[in-house]
Amino acid sequence: MTVSPVLESDTNYKGRIGNLIRDARKHRGLTQTQLAERLGTSQSAINRIEKGHQNLSLEMLARIGTALDSEIVALGAGPTHLRVKGPTTLSGEIDVKTSKNAGVALLCASLLNRGRTTLRKVARIEEVNRLLEVLGSLGVQTRWINDENDLEIIPPKELDLSRIDEEAARRTRSVLMFLGPLLHRAESFELPYAGGCNLGTRTVEPHMSALRPFGLEVKATDGWYHGEVSKLVSPSRPIVLTERGDTVTENALMAAALHPGTTVIRNASSNYMVQDLCFYLQALGVEVEGVGTTTLTITGKQVIDVDVDYAPSEDPIEAMSLLAAAIVTRSEITIRRAPIEFLEIELATLEEMGFRYERSEEYLAANGHTRLVDIRTLASDLVAARDKIHPMPFPGLNIDNLPFFAVIAAVAEGQTTLHDWVYDNRAIYLTELNKLGGRVSLLDPHRVMIEGPTSWTGAELVCPPALRPAVVVLLAMLASKGTSVLRSTYVIHRGYEDLAERLSSLGAEIETFRDI
Image 1 (cartoon, helix red, strand yellow):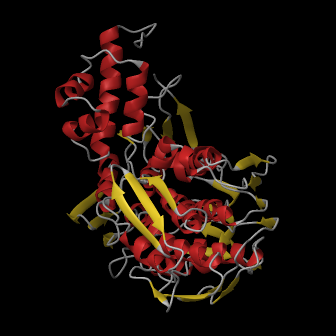
Image 2 (tube, rainbow, N blue to C red):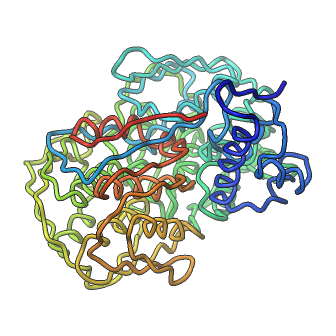
Image 3 (cartoon, rainbow, N blue to C red):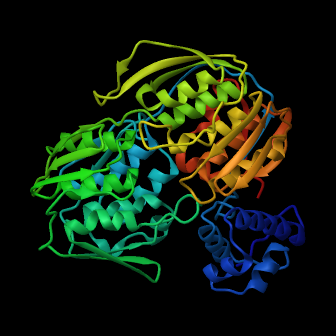
C-alpha cells in the first residue's frame, strides 16, 4: 500500500517526505548507509527516498520513524511543527510542573513494590508514555486516575519479561533503570538497547559496576542486554560509583532496596530525582540515610508489598526553561513552585550576569521535603559571565540546565564560553542558534563561545534531536523578529508537557500544525 496524496502530485508529496527524512537523518548524525543498515535496505534506496524518487509503503514509513526516533513519518498524521511569531513579551503567572526525571525513576521503582503505587501529578510526557507501554507489556496495570495527572500502578504477581514492548523500550534510555528492580524479580532477563536523546556515546559500564555487587552480569549482544543474576553474590563492602551519575545512583538504590541487608553507596548523586527516589523508598519502608549527600546507607527489605501514595517534587529544569524564556524576551513573569535548592547556583550565576528578580519565602513541596519558592523575573540588562559556565554534579550547576545559558548568553553583552563536558556532542546543536541570528562558535565538540547581544531574526529549522537544545531554539524564536517555524518537535514532547500551550498562556504566539 503506498501513500497517495489528494491535493498534490506524487512527485511533490514524495519529495517533501524525502526532505523531512533527510533532515531528521542528519540531525540524528546518521549517514545514508547507517540508516540503510537500520532498515535492512541499501544506501541507494535511502538516496532515492530522500530525493523523492521512491514509492513508500505505510510499513516503511513507520519503520523509518522508528529508526530515526522521530515523528517525521507517522501513520495517520504527519509530524508536529510549531509556528512562532515574535518578538513577544510574556506576562502572568505559571506553576512549575513535577519533575520528568523523578517521574520516570519512580515508574521504574514501582516494580520494587508488589502493592499499589499512586503517584501524584506525574508529568504526562512522551518519555512517561513509552515507559507505561513497557510496563504494560510486562503485565503491570496502569491508569490515569483524574485530570490532575495522578497515576495508579498495580504490578502483577509475576512479571512477564518475555513480552516486553521492544519498540517502546528502544525509544527511551530510562529502560536502563529496570536493571536494578529486575535483578530481584528474575534469574535471567533481556532488555532492548536503550534509546532516547541523541547525545553521543554514553557508556552503560557505570551501571554494570554498580550492580555487579548484587550478582548481576550483563552481556550486550544483538541489540539486547542479556542479564544473569547470581543469588550467591551480595555486597560485601561499600559500593563506590565510578561516575556520580543520576541514573547510576538510582539503579544502585533500587537494587539495594530489595537487598535484605545494609548497603552503603559512595560517590552517589544527590540530585533532585535521586532525592525523590529516596523519599519514595522511605515511603515503601526502606531505610535510607544520607539523603542529599554523596554517601547513602540503605537497609533493604526481602519483600515490599505496601499501598503507597507519593507526590514527586517540581522540576528544576522546567523552572530554568521558564527563567530563560523570561530573560530572553525581557519579560516580567511569576514562576511559582520553583525548587530553589536545585536552582541556587544557576540563579547566582545569573545574578553575576546582571539578572534581577524577586523571590518569596520558602515553603515545602507536596513530598514534604523539597524547598520551593515563587520567583518574579524583572527585565534585565545582562553582561557576559566572567568565567566559563560549566555543569557539575549537585550542588553544582545542573547538567541539563547548561544549554539554557547559551540563549541567555546570546542576549548578554560580551563573550561567554560554555563547557558541556558530559555529553559527546550536545554542544554542537547549540550552533543552531546561528540560523536565528546568533553568533555561536563551536570551539570543539564540548565547548561553544557565544557573542552577544543578538538581534534575533525568524527562520525555519528542523528541531534538534536533543531535548534541551531543542527547547533553547524554541525560546530564541520567542525573541526573534518575524515568523519562525520549528519542525518535527517530538523530542520536546518527550520531556515537556504542553510546553507550547503553556508559553502561549503567558502571551507567546505559538501555533501547532502539521503539513503532511
